[in-house]
Each structure stands twice: as C-alpha cells, then as structure tokens.
Length: 99
Length: 245
Image (cartoon, rainbow over the protein chains, first blue to last red):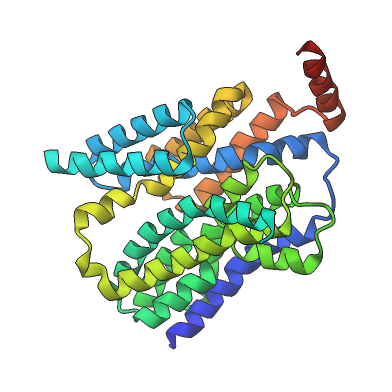
C-alpha cells in the first residue's frame, strides 16, 4: 500500500482528536467539578508521560537520574524551559562518558 | 509585528529546539524502517506527534491494515482530546471557529503545556506564534535526521532524548511549588503511571491508553478533593491580597 495513504489516515485521525473538543465546547464551562478537573489535566498528563518513562528514554540510568535531579532543582529555583531542558540533556551526555 | 504573535514566537523557541532533537531521531528511525525522507517529512508536517508517528512507522514497516492504523492512532493520541478540552477553556471567548480549526492542528503536548502556563487568556496571534517555530523544528528535524542521521554522534542524539521530559519538569515543578493540590495531583499521576508500568496485567495496557487513564484519575481525584475556587471567590481573594499589601 502507498505510504502516503497511511500518512493521510494518521493525520486525519490525529487532527480530529485534537479539533473536536476544541470546537464542540463553546464558551466557559460552569460546573465547578469539570473546571477543577480541566485545571489539573495539564499537570497530571505531563507527569504521567514523564514518570517513569524518562528513566527508560536514554539508556544510561545514572545519567538520567542526575539529569532529572538537576532539572527539578533548576525548576525549583525558577530557571526557564530552555535552561532546565538543556541541563538535563547535558547531564545525560556527561554521564555517558563515565560508563 | 503583532505583539502577541511575537510573544508567542519567543515562547515557541525552546519547544522548537527540543522538537528538532527528538524529530531528528525520528527521522533516523524512519529511514531504518524503510520510509523515504520525503514521506517522513510529510508525515511529521501533517501529524506533529512523536508517539503517534513512532507507532505509525512500525505499522507501515510491517504493512499493517488501515483499521489497525486508525485504532492505534486513536489510542495513542487520546490524551490530546483531554488537552483540547482544557485548552478550550483558556481561549479568548470571542475566537472564531475557523481560528480554532487552525489552532487545533498543532495542539501538541509541549505547545499545550506552554499555552496553559501562560498568564492570560489565549489569543489567536499568540497561539499562531507559539506553534510556528515548533512546527518548523519538528519538520526540519525529521528531514535532517532522515538524510543526515549518521552524521550526528549517537552520544548527543541519545542525550537529547531527555530534553522534552526536562521541559515537562520545568512546567510542572514551579506550579507544584506554588500549589499543594497540584503537587498532590502530580504525585498521584506518578503512582498511577508506575502501576501501569510495573504491575503484571496492568503493564499490558498500551502506553497511550495508560496515560489517558492516569490523567483522568489524577485530575479527577484532584477535582474531588481540591475543587478550584470560583472566579468570583478568586476576585475577592485578589482584592483581599491587594488590601493586605
């Protein structure tokens, strides 16, 4: 089968999943429960994607633990996205020379 | 240039860098799976989703059915519908339908995360600016990975895999520091997510579904135990704070 047909199917399905809730929900939701739920969704989702998956993402476990540790510390003292992300990568990179 | 658009562009830079790195390794995987650089580039430009594309590549490589492809994409990408629900509440109320249709295209994990941590309600120019560079980074990274993947030292491309996780940490940790409910929701998400990874039986659940279930459980429990204050109450809180100060 033509690869572009697969790609088209993937793109259409993914787009509809993103588009439908965004366009079907009109205006502000009144329910306090749903408002609270949606308020917590970003944090729950990002954390569920990160842990424990991050520990399997780059082979060298010691380096990843160091990277995650440094990222948490830098985030706690208010460093920005780029700094935190680069520092985490740098730790993994440096640790890769140790093993 | 529109100020909001510019502000969005600036916020998109770190995402674009992270995307470049991740899609570079995606490009390498594509070539190894028998997908051409042109096909891979079109896939990244039209899909903008790491997990979905990695899964799609596997299905293409083994010649799976289209039904299998649809099912896999729905399962892996289900979390985006939760994100779009949240995002719908933060968009400027006057935003027209066709603008929402455009914004929906690139509501990725990272763009969503940055949009939700934005202080004000989201305008179309801001969202357009925020999405532009990451779309370019994702697409170009895939293309370069596909045509020049063997030139990048493996040590570097592996280390870059943790970059996007680093971004997630950078977004959640400050929020958890400020708000105890967010911290508790985050801890619950870790526990649920670990259950799906390590408990026999539960570990059979696909990662896409597991993430959606963890999100619904942790955010749902958060909403039960720590309902956010109504906007009116919030205003009075702010007023009190202003008076105190």
